[in-house]
Length: 423
Image (cartoon, rainbow, N blue to C red; front, top):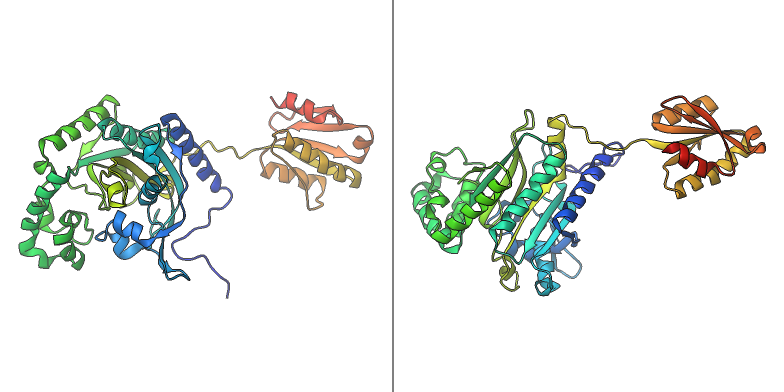
């Protein structure tokens, strides 16, 4: 029996991987402009990092983590998200002492969650995310949101919806927590076992339950916005004013709580309104996580970030019918006729590549006609033809495949002359 790919994973093949490369290039360039630097953390971490950082009451920790024991009997987990590892690294490497503050970082890489695979969702998926640590200025909340919006817009997406909420500070959340317990407790037996367990631990997570989202108590649950103290309300209003100044449209949704325990103050999601995108419309999510660094053993450090799935982004591009300007052309294909000419094209090919051209030759001893067909399949801009007779005369013929124009060049100076006609 042949071995097949594990469920919930995918092979990204040539022809598709170029889209990924283009998106990654765009994300890196955007981070350069916004002054975020790349960080790379391990694929696996100590399980405790996610239990303490992400939260014991989350679906991620309770149901979705790939956890294993190594030979030293240590519990390790394939990273299910990127924020906790970045904050761990921030603390461990004492980045809070850096001269430049806040510390602005981005990451891009595979994450792992054991969840039911569906369109645009995989058990191994790639996240791009940013984290800004060390500032409690609401302006950086707006900056982080604007970076995410900018990436989507620069890739051509138009049918976007930015959803915003405030989860308040510790005092606001405490008041809201008591109101939620009082609201759900009389009928908590009608909810799923997860919600029942969360009632005392983290009742706000009940609002994020997918199984009971249509229960009537969900519609009448107390809004966090009604429990914001003056400081939290002023902070949220400032974030909104900055987004308005940046011409970023948004809607406020008091039911947006996000799926991770570490969020407070600003929480946001970016969704796709594209027809046919699917029932799950979220493209990106993030928020502020003041207190997470302290939870993981570091100094008091405010932070905010977001993460987005590259797979979901590609699905949104497809839903809007957007074709990325991926360069899939070949600069030059070398066609040879005769044994000596074929041998000579080996060094000629290398010289072209050294000068920065994408170039290819035949490796299957095909006839001239078949070599030209191969050049067509590779979208070659130019085809250079070298036969044994031309080799003796130190000549090579070059054809522009778009215009059909053909010129004969001196073989010894071919690469230099090719640079001139390629412009």
